[in-house]
Every structure is written in C-alpha cells, then in structure tokens.
Image (cartoon, rainbow, N blue to C red; front, side):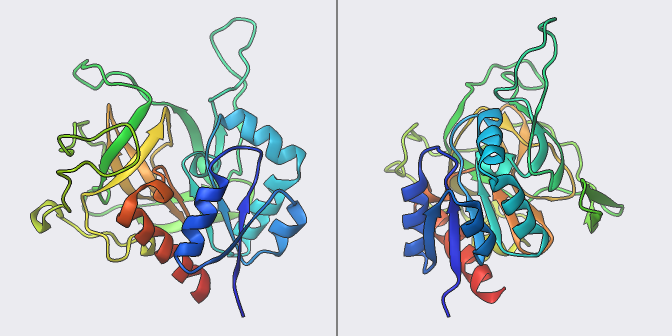
Length: 281
C-alpha cells in the first residue's frame, strides 16, 4: 500500500518542485491546503517560501497548524524545508508587527514542536566582518560539534514531551567555510564543483536524513533568518555565524534550512532518505 505524503499548501511558492522531488525519490506525494487531507496523510512535508508571520497566520486560518502538529505528535514522518523548518519552533520574528515603541515585536507563533525563537541572521561575524544577508547560494553542511559529556532535555512546548540523551552543543567560533570558487546565487552546481574529500569529514552524520551523505557536502540555501540552537540540531552551516541547518524531533520529524529540491544529487539523496523513512514508519 502506498504511503501518501502531503505537501502543505499555505499559499506560498515552490510546491510543485518539492512535489516533483519527492515523486522522483519514490514517494507518493500530493499538494493540498485541506487540513482534513493533511490529518489523513501518512507523512507531511512543509515547504518554505515567504515570511514566518504570514505563513503562520495562513496556516492557522486554514486549520493546518493543528493538523500538522497532530501528525508530528503521533509520529507521522515530517520534513520542514527552509521556512517549513522555522515553523517547527515556538515563535518567529520575521514579519511580526512592530509595537508602538518600535523597539520590540509581537513574535508570530509556530508549531511549538521545538523550543526557541527564529530570528534574523547577523550581518557581521564575531570579528566585525560584514556578510551578505540574505545568505544565498551553495554552502557546506556538517554534523554539529559537541563537548564530551553532558546531556540536556529539550521540552516540546505544550505537548508534555522532551528530547532525551542529546549532548549539549558547544558555542563555535563563526567561520567562512570553503566553498566552490564559482558558487553562484542560482541553483545549479558550479562547473568546478566536486564532492568533498574524505579528509573533510571529521565525524559522520548520525541523522537518518543524511544517510550516505558525507560531512562537508554542499547544499543550496536562500534565507535571512536562522533557527536557535539546541540538542535537536543534527547539522550546521556557517555564514556570519554557525547556525542550525537541520534539526530532528524524535525519530521521524525533521527540518532542513537548505532546499533539497534545488540541491542537485545531494538534495535528491536527502529526499530519498526521507521517503525511505516514510516507507519504514
């Protein structure tokens, strides 16, 4: 029996490219804005284009927020892409209305599956060097660096659950990763691009979404906001700062900051891995 994957339509773009990517990966995907159809789906993909507050408002208006959250709670496989990953968190500042004093915002609510607030990417690093924001183009993805020992539980806000057994991440020094010399702002690998050498992969990924993918692989990014860090982080990328580019909740819910549907062979591998998780759930 086919496992149906709902691609959530919250009135933003890139739906068809995500649907095509999932189908090419062997999935039985369909686009829908119907909360009831989402609630019946075997798996859910939340694609990402647009502002956090706008997406949150539309999802709540259409009843999608509760439907998606409930599917995650019961263990249905889930993949959030870019803004779709951001919406896993409690709140986001992007597009939130300004208060009268113009110094603070009413943050928009997310799915609250993971704790924390999604905020703007810094435009300078720790040494004061300027970086272009939005962060657009190809960049490397690596497993997070953790110190020896120590565990932390991350609460699942409002769902009476927690992540256990994850190690506390260190605060890493921001750095500019090595990238292809001709990396462009448009999807499509540069002509001199090559797979990262084995020496670039210190520690392999443990997240099943990255099965068979070497540390240091390139993926395509386009975003101005970044997720908070925590024990749920399974991959990182550096631009002005080192930031989470993939997160995991329990065994079957994932989010990625990059766009797998625009990331050539590496992105196709991530989608195949997700479809495998869906079929094995």
